[in-house]
Image 1 (cartoon, rainbow, N blue to C red):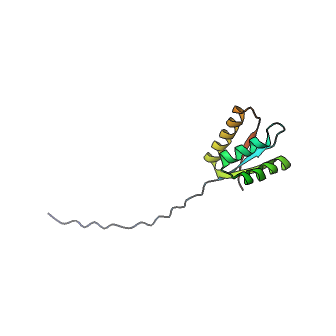
Image 2 (tube, one colour):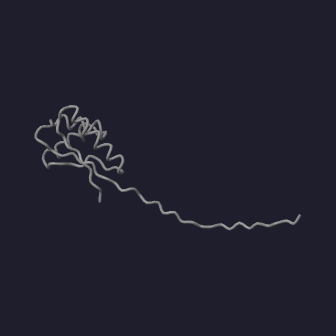
Image 3 (cartoon, rainbow, N blue to C red):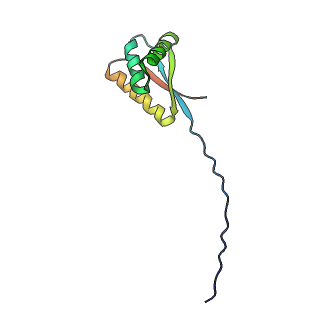
Length: 102
């Protein structure tokens, strides 16, 4: 039986990994949601310390909105849904939105 030689060629490939798009999760000010509830939301859903949560809450109150975090799309979407549902359960009209980060 004749011997067959097989030559293997190395093929170089380049893989470009695209970084995911990131989205800002933003809380909006309203005239009904208490400041204490906003602080609670910031601590619970965005893992902020009380001093940081107070600072962000005051920014929301004074400027009308503030970025609470920047996440990949699915994480940002989940945060928005969780915050809105939590606010509804507690009978607050708190609005939370997401916007593509620049």
